[in-house]
Image 1 (spheres, rainbow, N blue to C red):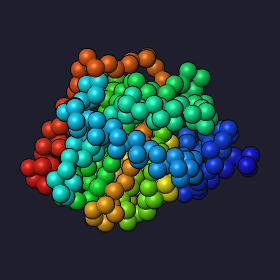
Image 2 (cartoon, rainbow, N blue to C red; image 1 turned 180 degrees about the vertical axis):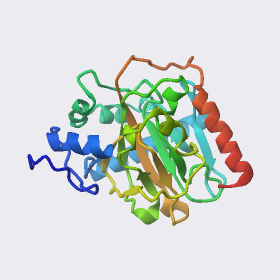
Image 3 (tube, helix red, strand yellow; image 1 turned 90 degrees about the vertical axis):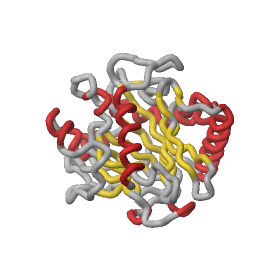
Image 4 (cartoon, rainbow, N blue to C red; image 1 turned 90 degrees about the horizontal axis):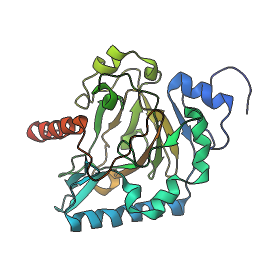
Length: 281
């Protein structure tokens, strides 16, 4: 790989392996990285099977939260309940836990620092989002936000937190997918709080880019980056997209348990989803 000090174009895709200086420069400049074909086709298929199993267990148990974090339930067009946001998913699947702890992903730790760790039992743990554009869905898209909202609730500037996203579907611009504003991870406190109305605004930004992925791709983005997920132009099962996010963290270790209270930002999320339900989204 080139040792030039130049920064590759924003649409560059890498192969996952030992982290080199070009990766660091790209992440520092844009706030994200895109690695191609990290998961095999069989791993992608097995991950989807594991999620279906967890969903069935939670529905049978009547579970509403995991470690204080609400489970987001929508409904399919035929009325069946449908988990659209899983929290701490790897705690309910040994296969998923082994996957996110696989040696392949240790390459990513140096991007955060020598004390970086996988936050499997912290924040919201392994988060899985399932977006679908159909009647009954509460997760057709996700408005502009930064993941630093958690820390802003405690009136502190967020520390670096890398979200590692494993993508289980082919997603082009017409399929919705991740939009982000490169470079906004370097913004100040005021911009992080007020640049956009958290989760409510969905309008396109002239400086945003669409991160188009293939099933098995991996993305890394700085949690302080402004980002959103756009609605698919397709409907029904064709619009279904899965993404798995694991936080790579620094700072104090703050594990969650079943006795943990629901954080304030999730109470806000409940209000926002109700607002969307009243006025449509």
